[in-house]
Amino acid sequence: MKITLITVGKTDEDYLRKGINKFIDRLKHYIGFELIVIPDIKNSKNMSIAQQKEKEGLLILGNIKSGADVVLLDEKGKSLTSVELAKFIEKKTIISTRYLYFVIGGPYGFSSEVYKKAPNKLSLSKLTFSHQMIRLLFVEQLYRAFTIINNEPYHHK
Image (cartoon, rainbow, N blue to C red):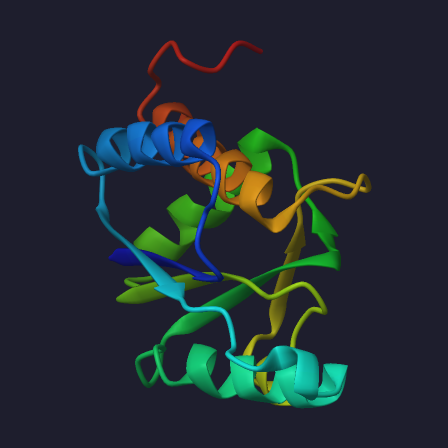
């Protein structure tokens, strides 16, 4: 299985980039992993929110392979514990999922077309975090999930 994280907009803060890269490097020990960064939409100030979401949605969907499983990181999604996330990923591995995509949208969320493509939605918290911080939190949780799956000491119960 290959896991891909799609995000909209670059990570501006150096400390976040360093943390993200640290966990991506660790993840590669367990699984094929790719981070796809969709550039911020140009001239977005001249667009409505709906137009921005639509444009971002087209770019997101254009990066997803046909037949892939897609999970949106969305405030309306299901909350899981770290152990439950590990079980979710392990199940995807067991059923021979080839491509698993997790998607972090832009500042206004996802277009209706993206929601149609992704039956699974995952919330990392009821709190609101910047999209840049969610990237770091998510790759850390993904790494944690693989250490749980492999019975390694990173996660303490």
